[in-house]
Length: 373
Image (cartoon, rainbow, N blue to C red; front, side, top):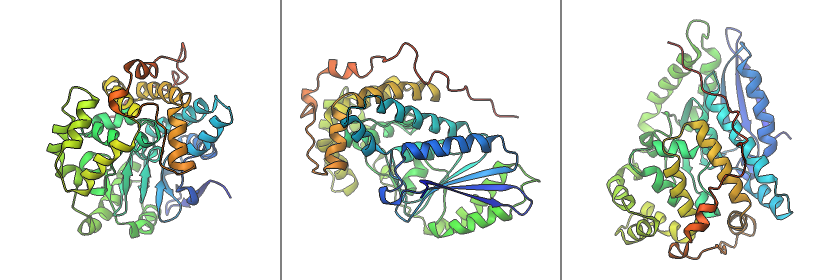
């Protein structure tokens, strides 16, 4: 069975809405290389096809849109000695993410259930990001010795205050209310309204209005109907001031100390405190440096910087060891390179940011075009 299912829906006025389903339910729709290789050429085709008015991207099953990149397969390739695997996978993934960002037609991401890592990269590339009452968003790469990639250098740096840094260092999840507050989502629609969304798009008149206007109008109506059911509680918003205090530190050891010293009986904050103790100390330093150095870069520059950093991580022991402990052997006892933030060698961190190539493989990503007046 194909890992990507494409359904073409003909609209009432003869156009098409393409429905793309990530079809790997057992792995929570983890984004694999075959998925990328199937999806990217389809998007290129639809971008130039006048009959295609919009695209919907969703995951198979009830649990997840996409729980991340297929890092287990990547781990196994590295373990088998294929040191070219990190570049092949990450380059293909980032090109797909950038392709979504640059896609000239509306793409609706139905971000129901778990949306983590690579799933966040797909979601943030879409023009219309829809969350539901079951949405669970996170960038938990610190737990596997990696860093928030797939464009996170760009979108986390655009969150209010220092929330992007906090979420990157802790991997803490956010719900639908959080996602809307942070600007990581555009609309809230109840999960049981998906079929209504599809029906309304098929019945819409695409000749009279722009495609973006049609999609926005449909989603706005569904959102209004769903508002009463949205969970109003936003842990991120509730703890904004505390998070600002915790992250207002001169370095990572001081930040970790401030986080652990915070007095709280809130489960969401307690989860953040626990995560910095379980995650990679080396990753904490890499993440802080990553976000700081990419703060003023363009989206395409961020993807290029992330590719260099991701391949460096793939060639280091930390990332394969983190994946082994959490997702392969599942013993949850990774042998990190450094056992605490106090032991991390700054020179070891610096090596991850050394350029691997004279010319970055993503140098050819196209410049974005200005939107028409």
